[in-house]
Image (tube, rainbow, N blue to C red; front, side, top):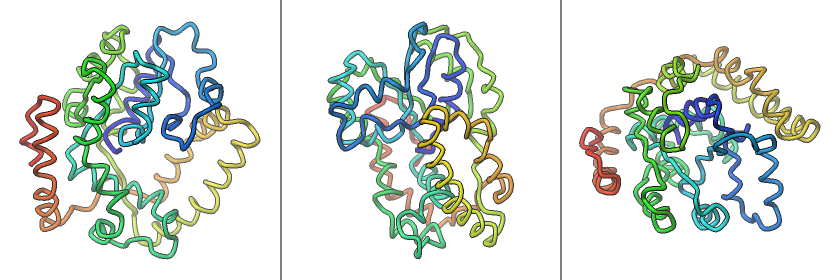
Length: 284
């Protein structure tokens, strides 16, 4: 999570040879059971027959204990890609994402007030996803290395055009295409948001929990999944909420916390570096 996948999703969706499921995060192959539900999955790709490549992006697949075997069984020739980020920055960015959208779902009365408190209380949801070497090793048990394209978040920030050209080529489509979202890499990838004030934080949490989520659920029941997704995107509800209640960027992480995380992830960075064959010493 928090490694530029929203921007990658948009850039893939804009390619004329690529049909992406309109909903990012279908999470289909991560579900408890998929038996008898493949028709439901195929509905995401209605109208895709004339496209050269068909795909989707679901962040949960990467750490899922079920997804690798299921995808291998149903789509053995799949081409997969993963975007990886410095684990320290990933955890911190993920914290602010959960602070904005998800912490209240775990325990509404005990939303953590600091990053350090969240690290203590939400190890599984916040910290474990940053251990990417274990997840990648699991995927390599089912798929050949040539079927897995690895992207570094650092490269998205530094050379987005090259990242897209390489990804398009890996997918088997025209690598020279430049999507409109190419120019939005700064706002989509680097920005991040944090509450304008404690009042804005509480107000957003209330509106998100009691209005946005419930309204969106009803829209899905009434309109169907694909129409509800398209309507939500056209209304730009998330962007409007962020503009009202949040500001760009995060408060600086304390140096003490950063040092502790650097030590904690040191071995992980070394293992991941060996696995993908790239120097990640700048992450230490």
